[in-house]
Length: 209
Image (tube, rainbow, N blue to C red; front, side, top):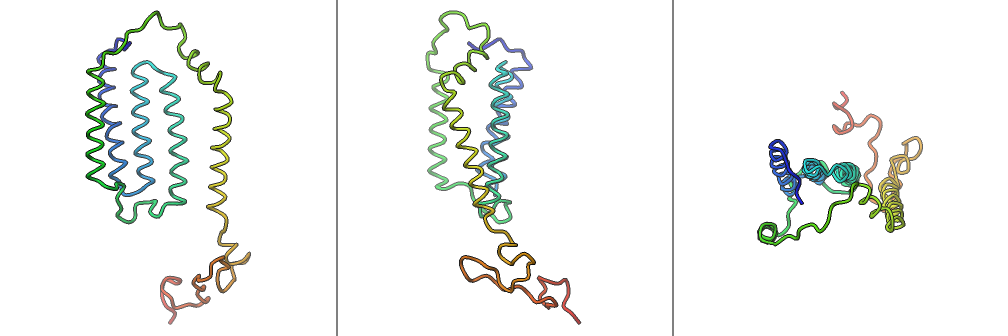
């Protein structure tokens, strides 16, 4: 059952709903995976605001905290691994744009029609006095072991990705003193270092006289 909402709550839900949709659209419009990540975070935070307006405080806080941490970690991985993390080069976030637009529009129409045409069941009985406690027991009771395993697996994945991304630094490539003539790479082909008094414009602001 939908609780009785004040005029301010209805207005907030309408505004936050528009912001959530706008954030979702921005994911496919921006030129960077990192920007798309933060656009998705903005969309999820708007959804958390909608839950808060419905007086679902526990779900709102959990959504905001979980999505904030998840998107922050995702942004770090995007910067480490993606070819264009900062959007410095034009790129598209959409593949098969026409087909995906048709599928998205059809799915939206079907879901929206279902919301207004389905005969939703009515509640049988009264809600429990503390719904937050009931939800917590349902999640962390019989599913406690699953939640612990998933948490450890996600943490191990983060550590493994970081180790893989930072396996070799500049000191591994050019030595402790950064004095190696060529980088010590597993695959040969690295460019040599410029000599100390190079006339290369990329190494010195102006060529020597």
